[in-house]
Image (tube, rainbow over all chains, first blue to last red):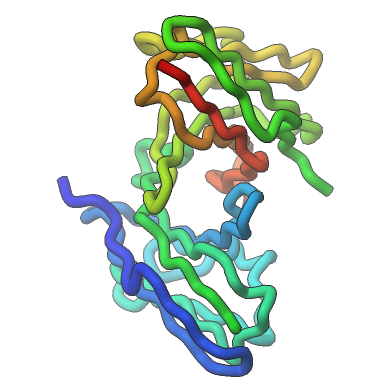
Length: 114
Length: 116
């Protein structure tokens, strides 16, 4: 079974620029999550999708972050414009309805904002 | 407000000995707890979990203990191996439904180093 795929793996941008991350979850997984992990901290949930609907985006900074999940499969997370404090690893995870709690994570995208 | 805390940033253990990683939580609505392991440049991988209806769950060398009254859980690794060296995250979730269903709240992580 293929795992969660993410791209790019690394991205360096200057502040005020835009960036987008892509995630392809495990086939058949209805629930998709985006997490932000700042160095020295645990992952923090940004947004949770169930199929292509948003379940929870309470911690997503909506003035600069946006996410979508078209057709209930792939997802993109965008930051526009980026700030220095957005430097972090962005993790995508997915889970199936039979095992909601056990989320499978991709390798993450390490973003550096200069 | 940090609802899940791992107060030890790091732990160093000799190969073959026991590793004990601790986690405390404050939200009494949490009823499902997980441990994830993370190697550098990889995403976290699920290790073991426990429901609040149990106080112990074992899987090979890994055992998780839950003390609901103290809002405390621990992960025991026996015997520890050098390949266990990684960052370990404790996570908590609630099953009661609503928008929090399935949402994981993570601790800060503990770096475990197992010396040969």
